[in-house]
Length: 347
Ligand SMILES: Cc1cc2nc3c(=O)[nH]c(=O)nc-3n(C[C@H](O)[C@H](O)[C@H](O)COP(=O)(O)O)c2cc1C
Ligand code: SF4
Ligand code: SF4
Image (tube, rainbow, N blue to C red; front, side):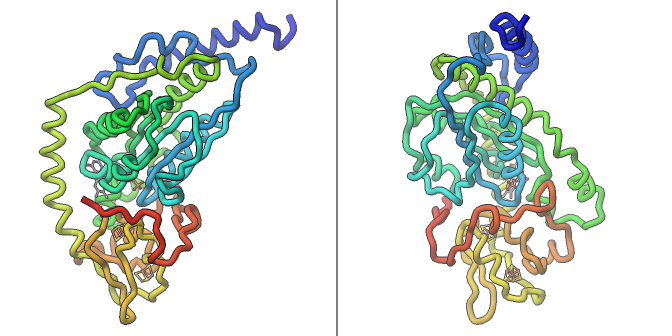
């Protein structure tokens, strides 16, 4: 039998399909009840990549304060790079919502802030052009507990016409605690030693994305892959409580930011703050009152001069899973503090 003949191909496709179907059937998709994926989604779900296909573009749009979500966005792209599609990975700091490049499928990712996406991220989603013929995945990174964050953001996009296709939450080191722990603590070591090359939840999501991409490439309507977004009144209540408690503790922190004597006025923080909340005045760094609490400035300051009260002095700093997160280089934030980008008011 000739390699590449229809028979062998279809056997291989069948085998691959079976293998991936079994794998994907266990996928959690970030929902409480993942078994509610449409049954049809796995029938021929991986498409016939070898036949005539139109070229497709997957756009992965994300925000990342300290590198975790950026890493997962790139991780997903790497998992899918063997597919014959174009994958664009963009931070929302690079592209205004009204100017996102054309795409066939969209994936949006964010760090969980108080069991939801950050408010400026929600605002960004609201400004995305409504698309009734496009499907969307939602993913988030979390330190411990994402609650219904994925589900709520899928709902927000679905209410604007997007077809919800699934999602997931990926456990990463919690950047909300890292700047408060000693450098040589077991928590700091655990964060550094996590196996970032094998992220199971991200693998499951990539699997689901491959399934949908394959199906669409084979000519199936994206609507066939729509997921029902489960509603859980109990979880919504738990999330509201968690958010209230979390915000009560974190809101006061925004007023405790300062740069200590180690600051050499390199201006990095003024350029990388997504809220444009930091400025140099009278030879000193000043923090305004519209901080998003993304914690990027604290973790990125080369002098480790930025503190929240006394609690962060001499403590651990996080530069992303591989220690190389550099928003200035990655997102080209060579801007003056007055340039637009993410100047979306919080709240
Ligand atoms: C203000 C704030 C609130 C957070 N709230 C939560 C939360 O509710 N649940 C959780 O699991 N992690 C929470 N985290 C941790 C982050 O979601 C997590 O570390 C994430 O991976 C950070 O991603 P990034 O590096 O892309 O910003 C919070 C972090 C911050 C800064
Ligand atoms: S990044 Fe650090 S050293 Fe540079 S201006 Fe800001 S506080 Fe000062
Ligand atoms: S000032 Fe606030 S919004 Fe700006 S980088 Fe620091 S934590 Fe993020």
